[in-house]
Length: 265
Length: 298
Image 1 (cartoon, chains in turn brown, yellow):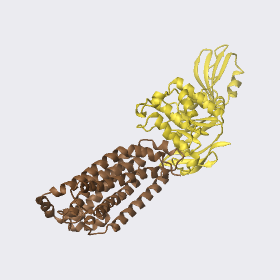
Image 2 (tube, one colour):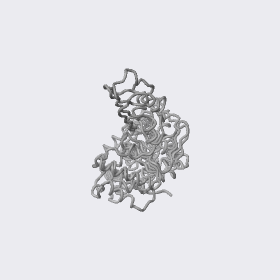
Image 3 (cartoon, rainbow over the protein chains, first blue to last red):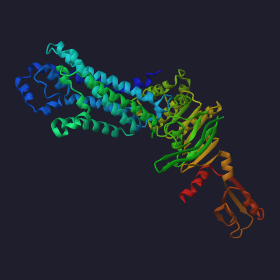
Image 4 (cartoon, rainbow over the protein chains, first blue to last red):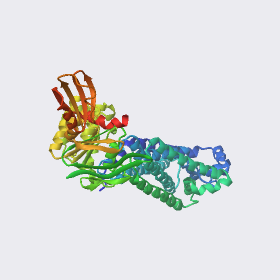
């Protein structure tokens, strides 16, 4: 039977952060929604005039940024969103193993009559619940914009775009947990996971900017996150999501194996 | 019945061997003291017994079950106090005890309440966050969390670190009570006086090797004696040059000797001399411990 003791404790530690991020993301997406009607033509023209490589970074070069779906897609790819999600996932994963070992509380918890898998699963449950809430917040921000009469987007497609965000960061969860399960130092775990995320983002950036680096694109998770195209209905995101979820699942499974086989020093 | 058994237990970290070929058997219902200098391998053995690390070679059994990292059932019967105790600083004392105790499904809090009383940790202290605790208070909390589920085997790494002498005395009483109830205590310590006071058996580890494993009295009696001899008249130079006998101090008719091992060669020599007074004392555990480490420091 899965006991909630550890889950409740981890949740209590993370709840303030989740709550603050939830509010920040809801507010941010609401602001995106609320500013759309007032974005002047010049702003839209400016966005349209950007080179395709830059436009690719925020979704798709073919997207009309002056349109509502394009504009919302821009919001969902905004660095603020990516940074907040990354910070939450990476810090949560680090707390799960490397943080416990670094703080020397791992001895205490792993000497209880519980398995290592239980410890990891408890942390993972809270991380995924938090990730779900943060993804939900991005959708709720848009819903709030609809409710207050600013915009009228397709809420189904908006939910799909938010689900895409969940899938992207599920993949980040996978490698962040795997790194945490292999390391004993919180700073190292945070640094490696953040560095890998930055590397994937850079690969996405350079792959879009430079033809000769285009071969990098299939190898970065950001290539499979296309909120603007999803909102426009240009693509069905199912394939991309399946790929991101598969990557995440494989790495989460690997993190259970890594933790089970390692020494707690 | 043996509560802890190890056979050829070895742990290597890269080129460094932290524990080598350790064979140990600890019976039920005793307090076993595990002594060694820093880095000798005490904590490595404890971590191996708890399944926190895997042996490079050999095996360990605790309460008849082979220690495996994945066997949480075994840990239900173990209470553990880590050496460098770190608690969840954001919790209150009472929360930490509740959190750590809930994993054992023990609803009865009588042991916890008794220990809070004996170790003098008042309810007001339990309401404070752990981060505000002194070293001693944290150690008390650590001891209580290790004992509160009434384990059959207690594994404690330096249990009295940070405790004041009065609380230490109460803690020794707790350990004796525990033993009287048929429970087993395995404790590592730097405090040799403490081990001498509470442990029946002692193991001494040096550079990862077990160099002694005996009853405390046997170890004290067998290995080292302090002998004071007063002669009727001054003795000739070289009279006391006997293998295994060190002359610590000699002044006219009086000699203080340290005898390693068998006393008989000395007694045979003394039998031919006019002895006015003779006093033989077993060495303290500290002397024995230092003796074992003498070669290393020489």
